[in-house]
Length: 394
Image (cartoon, rainbow, N blue to C red):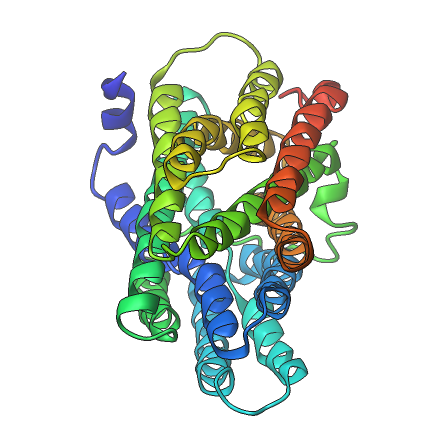
């Protein structure tokens, strides 16, 4: 199993851009929770906190595919530094305004600005892998590596956010995230040798890539899974705080990612012969049982066990869907295609943040967990409905 991972990292090019990508996208797992905890601490409302945090995700879902299309045409080294500069300006403004007397609607201006400029680092790194390996089983392993890194990010990031917010200052997660994005993002942009060739002759690319080759079905799968992530994450944070142990919020989310990491390591090292669309159906089903159990949970310990179990299917789901996306994306538009899938996750995540925040304020955390369970069931249903559109043959 490990031999496939060694083949993917043969040479030092992949190690460098994968490491830079890890640093640059670590803030992804910190910003949402950080803003949620910061706004709630300063303004006393999960509904407002979820809406502000969700606006970042919605804006990123819109801006990600647009900037990725531009990156496919101009190159990562030209576009990424400009995005980072805009994010730094907007994020610093948010850090200063959240604890002030500025009316809440003004927070959305900078939240949206930060989100619209946010680069889809995962798509940038995966497009480098695609340029390096082209296709085949080792590319699937490479996507597994990046999904494993995603899970490491969601183990480390929430823990840093929860700990820094409670022990240092509610704004600390945002400051740390800005620093990591600048360091990792500029390092990634500087690696010209591994950058995918630009599609400079791209004229009018026509309709968005998500509407081509059946990718719309896969995009909806990502929207539903994003709802799953957002609802469960918000409910975990609220559940642990209402239990009088807010620092455990990040730890429980980290355990969720640990379960996903284990699932990703095993899945990426297997030599499965069944078609990817069938694999996608099976791994999406793994989200359902444990998530349904969260609705009835009454202790942090039981919640932690269920999150580990629910996480096992997460990374395999993202690995299989990334492989299908790569195979069905038009030539020269791989970055845009992968970014569009992440945009779907962002939209679903944003909706779930706002909805779960409202449910927590008005009904309780069990209703927010129920939203996550419904999203998991919806993800599974869509993989079945769209299975004939996920074939590797275009």
